[in-house]
Length: 361
Ligand code: ADP
Image (cartoon, rainbow, N blue to C red; front, side, top):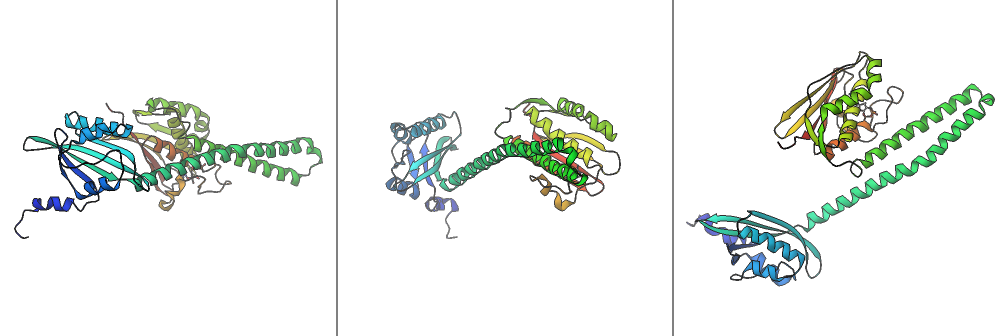
């Protein structure tokens, strides 16, 4: 070091940043601007015009009559009056050749009992475009899944009903082989129907979900156990549950979530009778709910794959199913702001756990 305090280098260093940066006093007068701020004003015809030292930034912003400028001015004035400490605002900006997006950020700070405001404008065009593209492609994908599955149902119904017609009307003329072939075909069509229905439900999780409400998971579990009563009796399953919390969510989707996990626990129980336990633990601002079974388990290397659409580890002959159940669970949990995963030991059992945000108390 050549004897200077590092702080003294800050203005020169800030001049190198690709961020438009200024410091205002507590009335909005510009005290300092960096090089990017100065250059930006010359090169662009924008609404939130940066201005030079000595002018009042709030006045300038207020004078521009566009909505963008008015929003920025309102935020800035709240910072100046001390009503809030931070104001962030994303806005489009017309430079001579492109439309770009900026983030304006104004934050107050105190130095020697005097309040100041640091204002920065960041170019966020890349992030903005990326996000927009992602949203658009998600939307298109969802629409595609919905339309595809919806429109596939119709011709499939035709296949099924003509097969049934064949079976009924020509039953006497058909030999055993032919009857068996029809049975296979009907079975295939029914499986396809179940898959399409699953896809439809899957594609509707975001778009057709209910708004969030207070949901008592204990009541949800009770309902699910009632619905599964027959299966539970048939398999002689033993199900135990700790007390479960009240969360904020979509009751019917949470019902679906528990139902899928319990159905799996009953289905993939192996030779012995199913033993399932459900528990809930609170970790800071979220709940973790776990559904444990003592069934056939899952190889660690398949632990991620099973949450994908149509991914199954067994043939249809071994275990019936469409491979949508866990994908749906994941989508539902994601919509609720949580995550879902499995811990498992092959032949020992699996524990499916998911988190849900705890309501603010
Ligand atoms: P499906 O049960 O219709 O095949 P899922 O998406 O519910 O579809 O499950 C995907 C795969 O994950 C299942 O085919 C099965 O191989 C495996 N699996 C799910 N739950 C369990 C479980 N509790 N124990 C062992 N394997 C499971």
